[in-house]
Length: 416
Ligand SMILES: Cc1cc2nc3c(=O)[nH]c(=O)nc-3n(C[C@H](O)[C@H](O)[C@H](O)COP(=O)(O)OP(=O)(O)OC[C@H]3O[C@@H](n4cnc5c(N)ncnc54)[C@H](O)[C@@H]3O)c2cc1C
Image 1 (cartoon, helix red, strand yellow):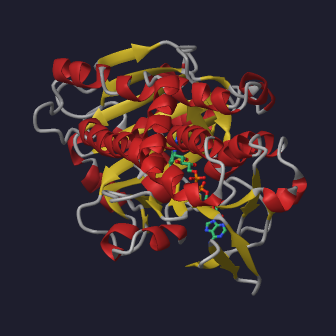
Image 2 (cartoon, protein in one colour):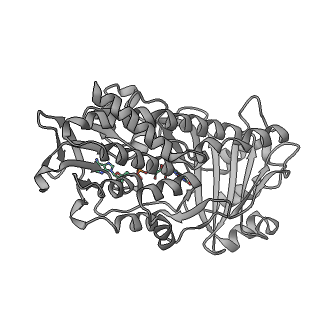
Image 3 (tube, protein in one colour):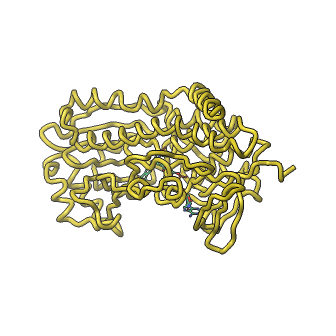
């Protein structure tokens, strides 16, 4: 029977690859394999926020999603407060969002671990770095760094922002390489007492995320891990195209970046806290500004490989999981390898406009947070109005209708 099944390779075993594998493993006509370049399937980084659309998407893939999230240790997001950090209104509250309002936060590694549990071990291949992809008469041949090759009917790149499947899908190098988004950030996990003592006791009376919006930068501190750790973040604007992804943070450059903030309640303390870190460094974020297609014949891309975005709206992982829902839907509705092109094309047609809108909205949100939107500036009322509606289109998606739309597109492309 196995030889009658369509063979699909997933390249990359991050949140996108693992979510997709869970969607596709349920389709009996597919024989799927996941290839991960790292020696083991693992996630770096601290936590990921799961908004309501992300949770619903996971539930479309796995009816047991709530239980999976519980086992992964997901908890409600802290209440969050946005405040002005620079200028004459520094210290003014822009808005408060109470905790328990739909959002969850979970450790990345724990979420990935739970997503891998339902997958049979023999479909997960670690230490397999993809090096090339060739279209053949029979399908797609993929080669790995260890010298091995495999034949598949279709290949899906979930290999992240700097992945190589994107190069195969997009021939134009201006499109395939990710470009600097114009923002950098420094994310640090600091012991609770230290953060409270340096930033100020008054900001730690309740477990809360506080984001400070101001001239040319955004500062944030968020209590995590049962009041033992505080995530302290500074985001700034790259003044020129960064030569390296990483740059050192010094007293001189931080004071210059935050010069409009120094009379306010947060900047001086945050500078001390950042300089107190073992390696004070900022990282430029990269994004895919425009992408003409997520699909090319029997190959397609999902997750950050397709639509890497800035983290301002905390939406990237959610979009990867929505991708998995839609690819699972269209691949579930085809019956032979010759229809894979149509399925990938339908996926591209449905997903790309939404993801592109979020890429642009996320960058625009960063501009507002850093006081760089010319219509909003740091005007309290305008900030309230601009920010109150920004997440709505991301969270309010009707996934059942999105799936129906994808099936409609698939039928159109099947008829051609
Ligand atoms: C600071 C920050 C905060 C964020 N916060 C949030 C948030 O709160 N909520 C949210 O929804 N999103 C958030 N995101 C976005 C989210 O983290 C990403 O969109 C998501 O993790 C992308 O998953 P992925 O699987 O597509 O890519 P990745 O996690 O990059 O996984 C790609 C995998 O492919 C493997 N790979 C690469 N090349 C090859 C190869 N040649 N062969 C085989 N394997 C390969 C890699 O080793 C890796 O395991 C945030 C992002 C950042 C940077």
